[in-house]
Image 1 (cartoon, rainbow, N blue to C red):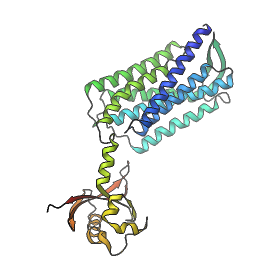
Image 2: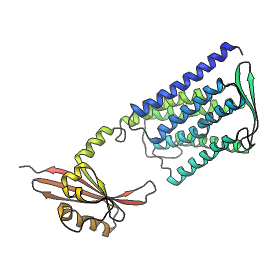
Image 3: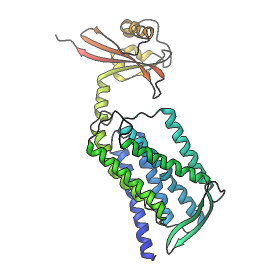
Image 4: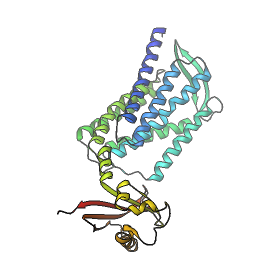
Length: 342
């Protein structure tokens, strides 16, 4: 392959890298409502594409190995994060412990890439090679690389299962978006498998994953735009209009928002992570007994009620704060202000 073709390939990797950076910058600066897993997917694609670009201009084995280690951020994390993002779109609940295990396994495998050139657990052997002016590594795969491939194909299978609707979720998206997502994933998987079967020296996967990310961003942005979680301005306005007071499981005061402090001035004097003061103030007059009643009944339903202070009527809701695993983390009192008509 001629030098001109090498330059074109390097430019192609550079463009792919820059597009990935642009997507990430858009998500963290102009986009609202993107989940942490969506941003993480964009981040690993940036790192991986940077590795492919650096590999294309590497001059020796040590440099090429370092670049190759960066490229594995895509192979190790992108399929998993694609799967997690699809479960978020379709509202398929993945238990927290399982998510933790998934991340732990992929991080452990990524640590194994640090052994390239030192042990035979990832590559049994590795050599710096050129085909014309194209740089690549000639390697013999080790046992942990085989395990990595198993995890990748497992996530590819789970992606197809979720997108095909075999696992039912609660999210309703248009049939057009669902079909687009399914074929987008099928195309990405097909290119990767074909690349491995044919044995291309030039890696096509970084281009395909960026293309996949661009197209996947369309339905994700649409879903975020027309959802509460994606409209932070609406949520902020609602938070400003309502009062919120928080307690931990031991009923220690854990804070509240500005509206709650306006409605109950004595909160300014309360110490964080301390028990509710024994007497005095509006809280003890109107909310202490309802809160204790809620705890005594141990009812999962919200406790609703109302009271009037001067010309202002306040309705309250008392509920339980739980984490993703459903474990009780404390309690919340929500307050709505309704002015009485004169």
